[in-house]
Length: 538
Image 1 (cartoon, rainbow, N blue to C red):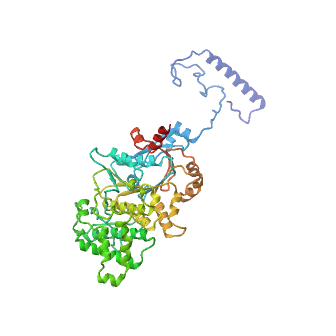
Image 2: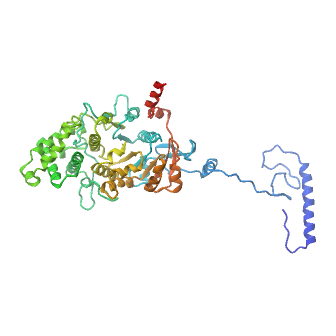
Image 3: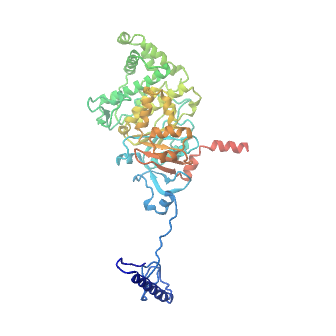
């Protein structure tokens, strides 16, 4: 390297170059005779020659400085080589799920992905306590949700699986509970669930309108906004909550059986029938305390046959106001005691719910032989009964809706689910809806219908979206509904099994490879039946 001032002549510049060359040769002779030091590279020796220690590119003497060559590499490889600039998680610490990945192979970047909904809510990352998890068969969605829920339970949360039609959650639940405790509640056979049980009275309070003070449970499906008020749970609010839940489930059942919305007279007759059944039974809901166990409350609860009897023998006032509507509603509800569902939901509960177990599972496999309409009613009865004991706000609980598409074909069912999702924060619960594809939401109703709007409301209220690989014909619709970016849409179509795109609120999506232990792998094997049949065939 030489410096040539612009004011010198050509002859002077030539002399300067020659002088530089002579100096370079002189330094080269000195370096050639220098002994090779065994010290660590880069550390100075005890003595230095006149031209400086012979170290490449030491800026001494006349040398050639060459720019190092650049190699093309992927951002994933660069992030792995330089972990301080690699992709990171959300800054949360609780509930390990897996490792960040590239969405191509089974490699992971090493950064851990943790996801605790309550911690995310406290940090302001999410505002809604709900998640939609989608994935076609064979993409690993079952492993993802089971790993996530199991790790949440081990972190101190509790869980409830609303419907286990494949009997896959039983081994998971038994692994999390003591050996002498059975967390699986089988629905069917000799087991009876009374959907009209009052449940457990909350200790925390009632969710009320901040302006009117009325219970929000009586206005299912409305937009309540973010300003929910938790008022002390007075006797009046508790009686209203139980009354509202009973009206909701019986109205849902009747509308499903009738295949239409109830008229005003029919709704009024149903309300009068519930009140008359309570009076005839002598049930004192107001006297219940938070210490009253669900079993004690269930023993004094009214049943569906009690309501049918009250509807068939209405008071003179009800006859004057509603006419023959009472008998019409009673005829619809008759299928609950003499139809496909006879013996399942028409008596006092024989299924015992234990609030002290970390996870509870409703095994609905015996109901698979029922017609679709009967399965839908059974699902609503189970959800209503479960809500009566888990919506007291005393514990933080994950509620999983397996095969969620079964609940999307009925507007009454959608209203109940929307109500629970909007009140999830007040109830202390986190809801997970599992779908095969987002287009399942379209089966709720035609474009512009109220049912379609309710289904889209579920997606809007879900601040956490977990997307496993989608088929090519679903990519565009999924990307549009979730407002995915171009790179996110691209990676969604080529995700390998066991990896999913996690979208948290409006943050950038992360590809996560679910990590399961050896024990979890043995518990989550949903292909065991296929493997066994393959061995038998061989």
